[in-house]
Image 1 (tube, rainbow, N blue to C red):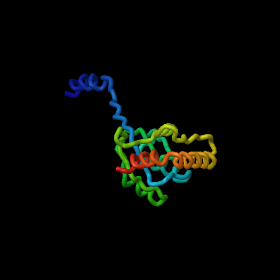
Image 2 (image 1 turned 30 degrees about the vertical axis):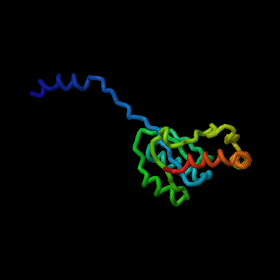
Image 3 (image 1 turned 60 degrees about the horizontal axis):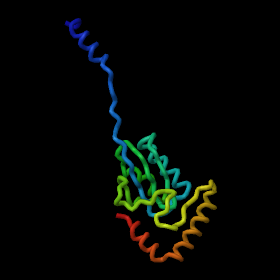
Image 4 (image 1 turned 90 degrees about the horizontal axis):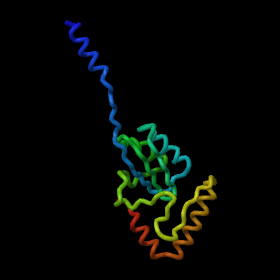
Length: 153
């Protein structure tokens, strides 16, 4: 009897197996304040614990992290790690046109200063903050429009 089943099993196991790639999704996590270097480390560690190969892009000036993942993120697990470190999530979800996302390295409005990473975090932040303050002072109405469009959902 087993001899009759063996050829059938052999033909089944010899078929090529094709693994289906899980769907990739771009996510956005926005925080209530700009992150520091230590907090950025917590961000990477917590996200990598949920998916080691996740693409992570930290955008400090805009208080957000963009990621490309194949898993559903566990928000409460992330909050358990991040809240004691001073990171408070104000938005977490898929990236879409309705989120008012500022892309790292692009200006949200014409003339708005860009954050330029030269490898000197304190100097870069100081230059950006100074340029941003100057722009805000010279463009109060545009700044009001910009901040209204960035309110958490």
